[in-house]
Length: 279
Ligand SMILES: C[S@@+](CC[C@H](N)C(=O)[O-])C[C@H]1O[C@@H](n2cnc3c(N)ncnc32)[C@H](O)[C@@H]1O
Image (tube, rainbow, N blue to C red; front, side, top):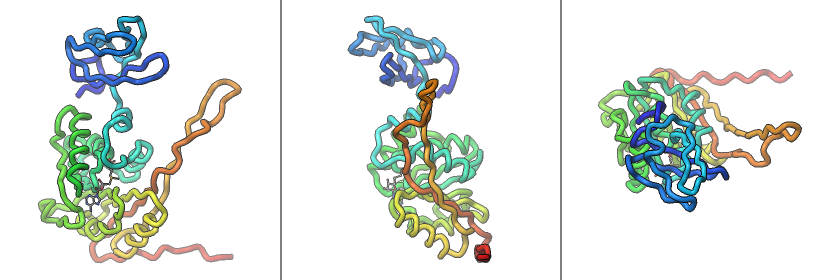
């Protein structure tokens, strides 16, 4: 898959019309796209630089860019709710997903987080994705394969229940990171403890306050993690137009809470968090 350079056959290209409506095509030599503004010839796009304008037979202009990761994630078919880009960005940075990391995630769902993880760990890393539902795993596999144009060799999708996973299933090698996105992640904390390397990062993603409380308490009860942190990210776009400059009326506010903790060395109990004495 090409990320830059002139358009090539096989590229997924987003066409934007003057009303900012999008059409997405996969370029094929001699193929034609029928629109209500007339036909667009793929050959007019192949070989051109990104940001070019192509005209339909009726003269409507379409701006052409390759599909970005966010475009793919927001438009791909899904069986389960996806982790939105504002949150996967937090997971990549706060979860310290480094090139070469071995990452375990569950559930794979629609594969949205998986795609970001695979890009971040690179060719020398590995992503192992557990998914309990065959229909959801199918969505994840299709979405990941379509994004990369092939099955990434560093991806290991598995149909199964993370709760039943042991170190033997991972060739006896603990992983660097464990990421949980499911309804009841507290049921996977004992397994996370067994599969995570000392110093490794555990992150969970949950939508509601009761889930947040259960995961925080569950992490504390394991007695092998640092005191967990919890937060959420709110993103507000701004309209910048002279004296009318102001925040947009609508925003993507709550999606889910993020929870973070690090695995302690074996045999170490978590230091008690010290609260400042009241004056
Ligand atoms: C919200 S979706 C995950 C979405 C995914 N992170 C994404 O960005 O596309 C949660 C998934 O977890 C799966 N799941 C729930 N419990 C599981 C378990 N114990 N082991 C593996 N998968 C599980 C569900 O079937 C569901 O597909």
